[in-house]
Figure 1 (cartoon, rainbow, N blue to C red):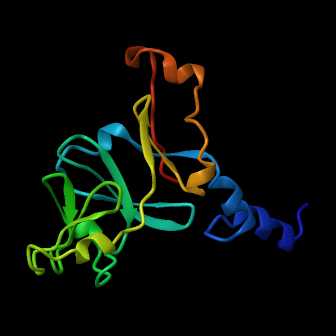
Figure 2: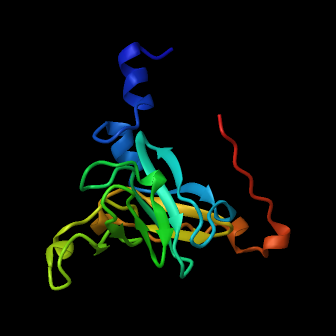
Length: 164
């Protein structure tokens, strides 16, 4: 039987914890690909102790951003998914799938302030009907997993999601 200290050591997965740091080094399944539609409503999710918001932009690319807008901390789950970005409902700042601010309607057209603002994002890949995310250091990002079940045709694969 594990001691309380050992149990906490292996069961806590939030940022900065030993097990959380280790798990962030691998690609993690986040959502079923069918859960996000282009320009559809953003979806809030919690993974490894972090609350995030996922969306699929106009071009079909998947973005997973921090849950709160970096400007005024408005919940991005209420943002509008439009024209290749997620637009915050508070001041209208728009972020692309890589967390770059691409539009600030309250700034002059020649302003470069938007180039200095970024939202934290999780690199994503889509494979085998699943959206995968990598939470670890960018310089240590491994290749996507290549498991046999991921290579079979979709009609021979049965992917499900369980919420506990």
